[in-house]
Amino acid sequence: MQFFVPVVNHQQEPLMPTTLLRARRWIISGKATPFYKKGMFCVRLNVVPSNNQKQRIAVGIDPGSKREAFTVKSASYTYCNILTEAVDWVKDAVERRRNARKARRFRKTRYREARFDNRHKSKLPPSTKARWQWKLRIVNWLIKMFPVTDIAVEDIKAETTGKKRWDVIFSPLEVGKQWFYDQLEAMDSIKLHIYQGYETKQLRDDLELKKSSSKLADKFECHNVDSWVLANNIVGGHQVPDNVSVVKIIPLQFHRRQLHMFQPSRGNIRKTYGGTRSMGLKRGSIVKHNKYGICYVGGTSHNRISLHCLGTGKRLTQGAKIIDIWFRSYGNWRIRKVGVSSIATEVA
Image 1 (cartoon, one colour):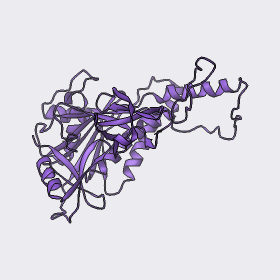
Image 2: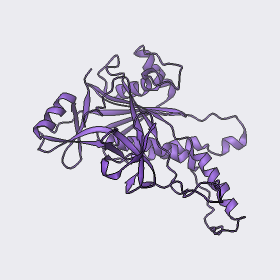
Image 3: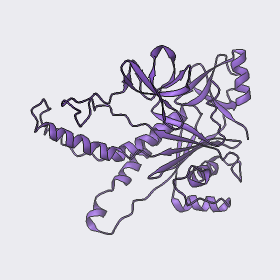
Image 4: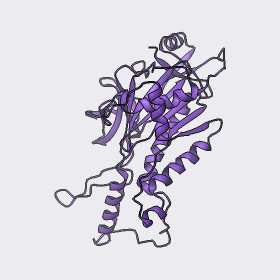
């Protein structure tokens, strides 16, 4: 199994990926410069590439309610398999914000007056839109690193109960996926392919591949097997998966507008909470520390920054100084390798 590193030119246009060993030789000779793109190790060519020929590369997408899978593949190689956790906290966050806003209007404090001219019902609820925006962010991230030509998505259907009220009104799931398809079709030079669930199963059965029933396990057979067969059906080239390593991505939850704790502490003082900046650094950014290595930025307290493990999310320290931190890349998720992976995060 070969490990691949995304390559871009000096104008940040994606080129065909290269092997890890060749990328190392380029870096040592000064032919390329290493950098991170939200956790993915990439190289940028400092010279004019000798060959601009690009192969057909497809991205297979298997949506889900709890886990979602993405596969980037050409006819020759499977470059990466990505397993993500879905964004499922928005509905509860909107409800907490609504309750807090109502509570402020009963306290003797400043509050925003109720506005009635903006009560237009949106076609897409915030929780549903956040789920499909998360998929779109992953796709845009992959397109910036790989010269993608095709995107294959497994279509999902909303179950109906047969009642008139449910059948007349579109479900948020149906409206959300159509918004997602419209965004993909608007992309230049990328062709969208939509497969039904039974078609995906038939492709999997034709290759004699098994899908695990453990939907929450971090394995290739759980969700990435479907995203792989979708991408392989577009570009072809394999009868068995050549790369079954998985990279897991977990989105970070930021409290952007919650400036203090909901519950006051002793003395009726509300502690500061939320925001997206930590002493000039954007929270979630990938940094390098003298002692803790590659990690990401959390909150701040007493002119010190908390750093967290990029793989597990565990807090490493609360006392990091800004002078001991080197910025690497912006990020809004944490990433870890499941087994052997094509993401060479150890090459800094």
